[in-house]
Image (tube, rainbow, N blue to C red):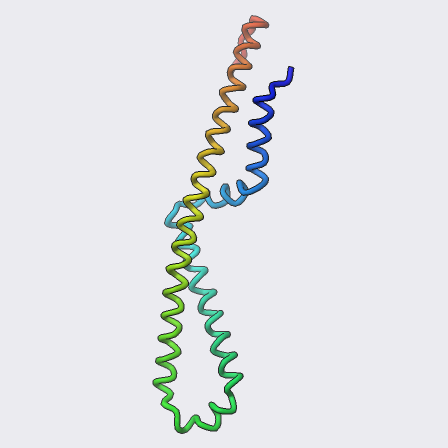
Length: 143
């Protein structure tokens, strides 16, 4: 006989596994500090590449001005300004990455805890069913 409670729980677990559970399960393979650290390392490289492309784009757009006034410009001040902008951008993106990844990790942990709780409930259902079947047939299963 079909047990509708068991089918509903199985369906709920399967939907979670195939949906947001994929990301949650992948996230839960890391310790919190490792997950956030990896995200911050990725953030550093992506921010560096992005800022480099922005500077190159700006320099390409302003190449006429830069070439005609290169002898009059304070190159040290220009480089210091570019580095200051880079550091400020990196700090802002790193803080945002830290906050985002902390929240994402916490959300994944909550989802995983619910998932494992559901698996525990399924195990209890199967254990009850097995013990009921043993009483009916009078046999013991070997574990």
